[in-house]
Length: 247
Image 1 (tube, helix red, strand yellow):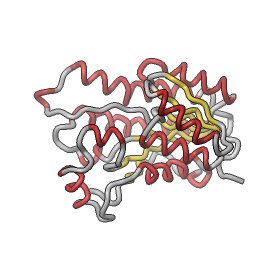
Image 2 (image 1 turned 90 degrees about the vertical axis):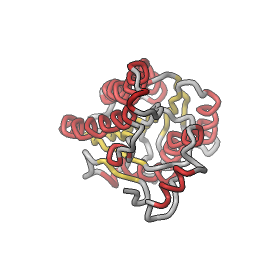
Image 3 (image 1 turned 45 degrees about the vertical axis):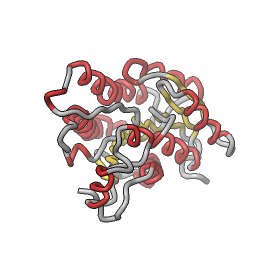
């Protein structure tokens, strides 16, 4: 029997990149998956088709976690009856030095990366079964590495780490485990768009990575399956750096 057979997962921001890889991996492990997207309907539909084409169960659910987390959860429950696994993957980012920080950009990133995560989690855990479940927050290695020029984004991921530790204690009595995955540089559409891949930044990251390469979305997805399953039943409140040894 697949390790996630009978489970229901909601993956936010799952129309591309790490989110898509996690959705596919959870489905491969037996979970029914709600594939959330904010604007990339084609990407979400492609992910759903990849799951259902292999006999899995999946639906696409539109909405930004910044202002529609409760509706995203409600549509997931309407489709599958409950939620066992929540992957808070949706996120936005932009890098700029301190002198270029604006209140607008601060709120844009914090509303999605922090407030959206909190409110989606709040809505989702109300639909977890009595035996509990797993919340997996996608953070970033930047919360430890703290690179210059990323002060707002790094602050959001530091907040995600703190939320992870706090909610692990708060939700533990309900048998809900809360952990974070902190990826290093991963090859995604977004990373390419901001120039992180195929340039000096990637070369510098590889030079500091003992395993000698940047990550692929599947590298993160395998850790998510572990945290979603009973294999990690005694793991909560952890921030798992998944970066090939990058420090």
